[in-house]
Image (cartoon, rainbow, N blue to C red; front, side):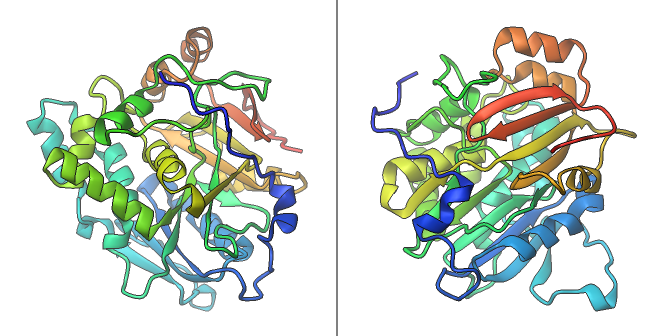
Length: 354
């Protein structure tokens, strides 16, 4: 794997945004944004917390919040924000049925269709947003909640992207490096010739800010190279041997940083994510939010994964020894990012995040 350039991108700790011209506290100086949240059935219990977190803590004016799901959970009449709309995911440009059918035609496991559908829905979000949507859209996973005021586009119109998890999970250090192999890096390189990572961070942290011009160029390059619709090229270049054979966040962050460096900036977001298998029991998102109430965290997430043990086993960004340890007993895990420092512990009740 080719190493990134020596001129590393400067980290922007969340506590320093005021000195960097990011904060105007809803004065109208920051550009407006749209928000897209993809919600599966398993996300419905925490969806309201996700929406409230965005509306309460975005320093950029939020024009609309579009929830992409098969249904919108009922809310009290006196608790409805007109900016929150529902889009039926079955009307997406590339529906999950199309993804499943195409994977079958390629001779691949169709059980990953839902995973790839949500990635493609994010990457094609501008196709289903109404006319007049701002040029920047914050995409947020439905099981992730912002807890502190944050700007997502600065006063110069630059998207503020998370560094996210390191591309190789080295615990208890801020010194990270590119792995020898990484499924998402290799898939992105197949999709777009000339695509290379710019540093050792993935951009995966359950949210991203899409710039319409950057995303449009990414999609167009892939279509021109492969001579087919973007979604088909994305699936064809994903690794068929892995459950997570590609990553939309890895693809976009490094594409934007390499080809449009003047339109983006980067920061660490201090957060805790609880990951666990889908099924009864375990932790729920409101519980994790409550546990972080007196912490200095900027966000928290609570995630349930289908085929949890299988996915852990195929995550090649986790070193082999660590992968074997967590895969041998796939219990709920608490992952914490603190300025690029990654720590991991078992998540046990009562959950404490101070």
